[in-house]
Each structure stands twice: as C-alpha cells, then as structure tokens.
Image (cartoon, rainbow, N blue to C red; front, side, top):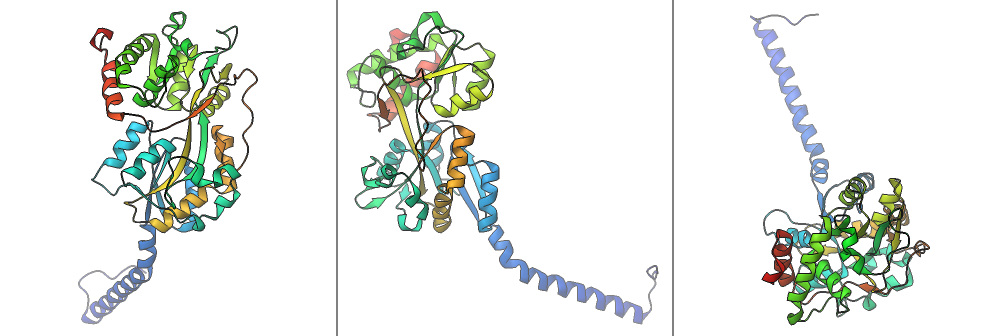
Length: 364
C-alpha cells in the first residue's frame, strides 16, 4: 500500500514520529554494539619492507587472523629506508625489515626496541645458526635482542649466457669496455664504493680516507659503462630484457636470478673470485611503535613455515628454516662478505650523487 500523502491527520503524524523515533533508537543501539568492532578494525600495523617480503595475500591472512589492517611500504634502497625511518612527521612504522648493517646503525641511534624473543615461538624452528642470536653481528646489544633473521642472499653477478662463452670470473667485468652500455648496477652509494674497493683488493666496508678520490674516479668509469642504475628487481628485469644487457651486479641476488629465469631469459649466476657482498635481512620493531604486541605477532607470523617457504618459492630467496639449494653449477667459490656498517655513510652518499650526476674524474 502506498504511503499516505500530506497533509496527515494528527494520529497519522504521531504514528510516523513514533516510527522515526524507533528507527533512530535502533541506529543508536547498533552503533554502540558495533563500536568495539570499529575500533578493532581501525588498528593498523605499519610495515616497512623490501619488495616480495609482504605480498598482499600473505598480508590478508595476517589481517584476518588478528582482525587488523596492515599498511605496507616498500623500499628500493637502504638510503630510502633510512630516510623514511628518520621522518618525524606521520605515524611512523611499527616493524621494519633491514639488513644487519642497517640494524646495527638503528640500534646505535636508538631507533629500535628490544624484542621479547620468548614471545616469538617460531624462532625455535629456525636453523641453529640463526638461533644463536648473540653470534650475529649487529642485532644485539648486551643481553637485548633487536632483530630476528628472516632471509638472506649474496650479491653475485648475473650474466647472459648467449653473450658470454664462459662465466665471468671477476668483478672487473663490470668495467670491461667490451660490455659498454650492456651493464646494469644497483643505485646505492654504500654498495657502489664497496664494490669498487673489492675490485682493487681494498676492505669494502672500511675505506681509508685517502682512497676515496681513487674509488670515486673508478665509479665515474663504471658509470660510463653502465646502461642504467636500477633500484627495484622488477626494474632490472625490464632493463635486462629490453636493452640486451650482458652482465648485472645483482643486489637482490637469488631473487633477481629467479625473476629473470622465470621470464625465460638464459642467464647464469656467479660469485666472483673477489667475493660477493651479502645481506642478512631481519625483522625488527621500532621504538616509535604503538602496536608492540602486534609487531611481535607479525614477526612470529613471518617465521611461520608456510610463510617463510612461500618467500623462497616465490622470490627465490633463502629462508632461515631450511638449508638453501646450492648455487648453479657455474657459480664460483668466492668468499661471502656479510654487510657491515661503513666508515662514512654521508661521504659515500655525497660523492655518489656527484658521480651519477655526471661529475668528471678530474674533480675528485
């Protein structure tokens, strides 16, 4: 039956007002009942991580399990990670994935909070060498533990097997004029100077002040050989495929190798005779976190076998629960050099900006 049109009688008007009051009361009651649920839904865990560490479907499982939202921010370099953590505005981050050298720096700067390891039961599933936390340089101070190992890789050389008759054996291949315009390198001031130091047989993390000019000139020469400096692994895949690249310094190591092979590229992977820089990425909780309990649950969740092994299947990166597969047969046995804090981050960054901006070698 259609609603009665205006004008209404006094009785009809009273009935309509009663219905409106009933609906209003119901809305108020419903809002009171749902208020706790809305508050829970508003809880946000803010995660700072590298590509592939927190895929949307993995995040969705965590969100459903704990009734929260997760906001993931990905970074493409240690420099970007530092800048984001240093920002004083905004809500900041609750958990961060970073290599042990960065963790050491953050601990020194008071950016991280100690972790209650006993509240992270999945650490008992890790390989013995990753459970000996006090033996891992950079992640502890005194009895306090500030980070839990998650994944790792060496930064080897990826090369096009169709352009190389034999695997490259030295980092010097990146400077070889034969490959001018067909080299890719990672855009990082810290790694670039370490790489140049390795080539000259110098300590990669502790460059003497008198050597900086020499290494800067070497990196200018590298710049001339490089087709592009990449940041993200997906970016390096597109550059490699599009520009007929011959060789690349693989900052993401096995992750990039898997991406290129999955894309159908015939590439090999080697650890050169000078050795390869290597990173061990860990999860840590920031001192600014307002979700400490949830941050600890996130770290434990990421160590769950189903999640850690999914990282290996999808990204090709080693997890801390299983022994990794051996490198491909053409890999060399150069030493693995785990990242350490460098002697002067600011100086490396300043010089690197000049190098990639086009400064001439005679200016260093």
